[in-house]
Image (cartoon, rainbow, N blue to C red; front, side, top):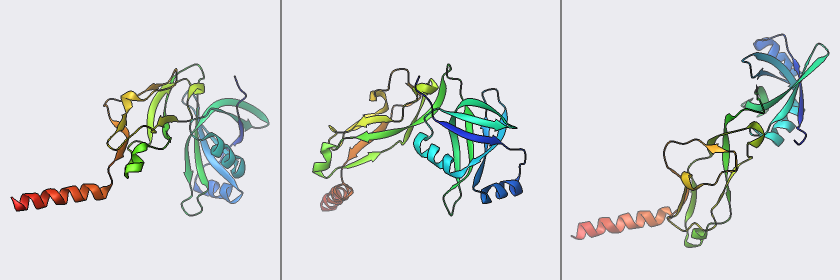
Length: 205
């Protein structure tokens, strides 16, 4: 197994708006680690390492969360769960991590990624992605960075449906209905002109 990225955090004892505000003034971010046994461990961490780690890992890569507590450290495989940003400055103001058991399946959302240039674009078609993510079940170390959709051969009116998407081995998608993930649709103007022509024909009749 490849070496996992590490993020060092410290256990925090003081909770509430006041202590959290002081942490942020010191360039630190409060957070919660939810372990695999249902325990919630309040933590704090430096802003810059957190930003670098999240930029690299996103929500789909396992890393090692190193929790320091009174001089002792414990390391846990974890994922970023939620990162809440401050609305004005856009910097993290709170983060949630959840622990994972590397031997057990988990359910996570993975983003779709479009690859290629649809041939329908030459006819003026527009590419529309209807779903940004898909929930999948897999082992934590098998979580894909993205689900790639090759749209190269899509012409105007063509779609890729969820049942036709090829998922990596060990990754099972969760869906109940068969829906189009991405389509190449006719330009809006063409639709409007067609509707207008139909209206004129009906008036003439």
